View 1 (tube, rainbow over the protein chains, first blue to last red):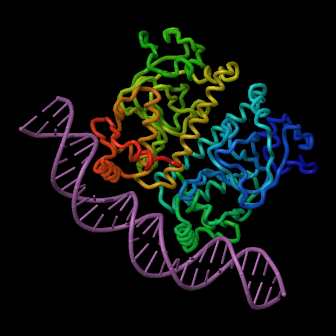
View 2: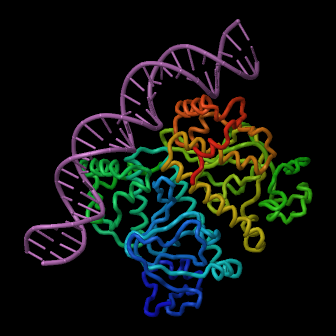
View 3: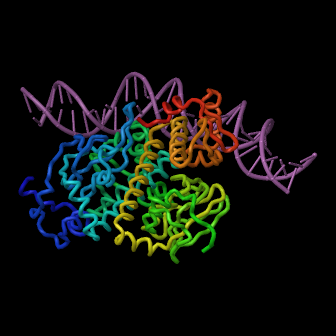
Length: 237
Length: 237
DNA sequence: CGGCAGTTTGATGTTACTCAATTTAAGTGG
DNA sequence: CCACTTAAATTGAGTAACATCAAACTGCCG
């Protein structure tokens, strides 16, 4: 447990997971943390959750980007979802131990660790918290089912456009966006693993987007030049 | 509400969803049903849940086969999961109204309908029930994430083999299986929509499986001739 | 016996993968 | 600040996997 590391950036501190769990809806200092919570950091690329390995902690991402994924024996991996500050690293891992999927940091990150037994015990005693968890389940299922739809039925262009739109929405919910510019610290390999394509093909598709004046992606920043067209390609309806 | 339609076939009657919800773990007659539950049937092909259309009911499949799916404007559809007797038609639809996905009967089916408000109110008051629902969430997420993995990373043969294995396991959990023969009332169109391929290609792959002496699929019955090889192709690890 | 839905087969087209080389960008130490 | 190193992105050529279109075939039911 480190002192002087308030979970300020965590959008869940107030009404979200942390707030409901700790009963600090009023935004009380995270310094008032219970003994069954502590923090840790991790460097870019570090694996913070390992599939099939038991752990007593429930992880929450406080800062930085990460992703959750499943790995095949042949080395190929599928990214299930990207994790932004305030996300539970794995909703399922609250209830299953060991977890089926792994998680890895993209940038340098900070994590909040809760002891699972304590979290679970609060589920029954704190109705507000259980409602928040219910909501997490729903969001998780919705997102993943949408991903199934995208992977099963849509072309490479549509998949990538959809991923961008999805991430844009999530970022915009946390930050103010100016000029349609989004901080996106992803390698093309990440995009490829998320939408089920090869990095080479991802490069070509993004290149085509660029040539059409749709987007500009470099230096970890996505700039959307033609939001309407991107929406037309990537939207599901 | 029909009389004389006991939910005998429903494997959830005892320890599962229905049992926990109604408090009939002892297997009491379903005739003792509350006023907020009733039954209905549906014919093969009938749509029993419509996306974006409000409904006050939570649906549970009592008999027959169905599936849940998302539809694109261009007509293509993605089957999210197949529904077997005892399955909730949509776990998410317990909490979101209207639902995002639709559901359709494959065979003739029978459904049990619970009033949503009553179901939800039992979540807080009945800890055993909320634990069962937690389990449903976990299973649902696990299955769908596995599907993401399959659609994103595996070939046509692997996808289809995986679907067969998945369905076989689920059927075997409900019925005694003799001679590796499974009742599978699916058209190739269903398989195609579930694994993100065209019916034509599904036909070719199944034909190849047949030629290799792997399986025999006709008349709604899947017979597995070489379980080990099917497992080798379709298993995820 | 005919009609229809579902499946199979063939020929051809398209999308995305593979392999390999090249360019660009990002660090690193002098 | 610049040469050097290394990772990431781009580009090209050839190939494999799956889609598309259309025709033929099968089994089932009236």
